[in-house]
Length: 306
Ligand SMILES: Cc1cc2nc3c(=O)[nH]c(=O)nc-3n(C[C@H](O)[C@H](O)[C@H](O)COP(=O)(O)OP(=O)(O)OC[C@H]3O[C@@H](n4cnc5c(N)ncnc54)[C@H](O)[C@@H]3O)c2cc1C
Image 1 (spheres, helix red, strand yellow):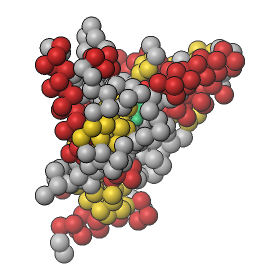
Image 2 (spheres, protein in one colour):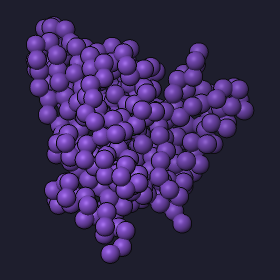
Image 3 (tube, protein in one colour):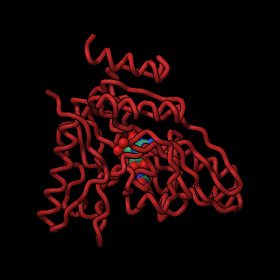
Image 4 (tube, protein in one colour):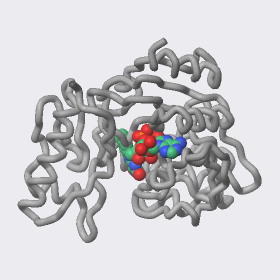
């Protein structure tokens, strides 16, 4: 039996057959519509399954990668070796008093809408962020003055040994578009948000206003991964890119958006290398013109195509 078949058989002992895919095309799961195949793509249905997969990965030295909604990731054309774990089946959202409890595969947009229905305020900022709850914690997602750090009470994670562990928000080192989740090798499986009671109409008004701002300023009609760069201290990435006359610049099918300079869109069947080359071109040009280093917010993972 070859190694791939052996891993497949072991995965089938842990996760239902319909939730284990082989050679899954990852571009179908990514906002950029770019990226190669995953050797194994699994969608567990319980925390225990996630724990068992982590233990298998440790025992058999099989690397694994978490994939949320693919809205902050660029995956290279050679794809990802090992196991890609996607928690889309763990997507329940409930409430306990003034807290909203969301499993990490739920979309943060849905948690925000759920909070509205429960007349709970605090997650309005997230009403247009297209990631999962897990992805939002991973990078302390934020928008229009709000961020996960402001509302997270605690999370449950599967740690690198496969244990289910509770981590208070203060233990996650949440900061501007960063956390210690990747350094610890944690998989977020659930998050509890501390919210405040407010009137439905007041919450809805804020969400409508933010949605209007987003739709009028962002090129949502094209595949993209949102803002490519973090805000450099003292500057705005979009303004630096705009002032470098880079809007409309393209490499292959990737283009610096004319509508929002911080976005790079997949305008015309871009490859991952078009995308990455354009990101590097933007970084180089801004550095030359303004002496400012643009740090990527978006993560680039996977292997180059052979
Ligand atoms: C049009 C558009 C607009 C956007 N606007 C905003 C915005 O206003 N504010 C903002 O902050 N972001 C924004 N983003 C970026 C993106 O939506 C956020 O970064 C989001 O939090 C990513 O979540 P995801 O589930 O898509 O993560 P993915 O892109 O799938 O993954 C991102 C990282 O998180 C890790 N990860 C995912 N799930 C888990 C988990 N359960 N446990 C551990 N690690 C995990 C992955 O391994 C990966 O390293 C935007 C993106 C787009 C396309």
